[in-house]
Amino acid sequence: MRRYTKADLEEIVCVQLENLNAMHDLLKIMKTQNELLENANKKLTDEVHDFKVRYYRTGETGRP
Image (cartoon, rainbow, N blue to C red):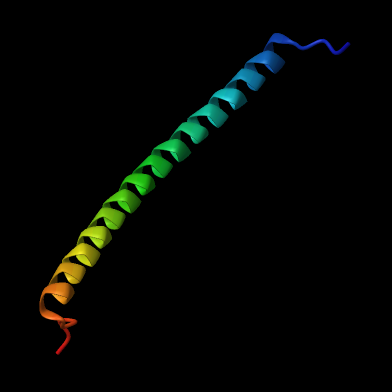
């Protein structure tokens, strides 16, 4: 069985804390990206809906 010194254990804890902080940062980034994607999808859905309404009302694509 390996014996760890206090310094070894402190280093392990510090590395684990750094890893947790890095994971937290990545989760924040992923949450922000998710929100951006949701907003883009909503905007695209709205634009498609508007296009369909305009197309089916007039029979035109709205292009010049």
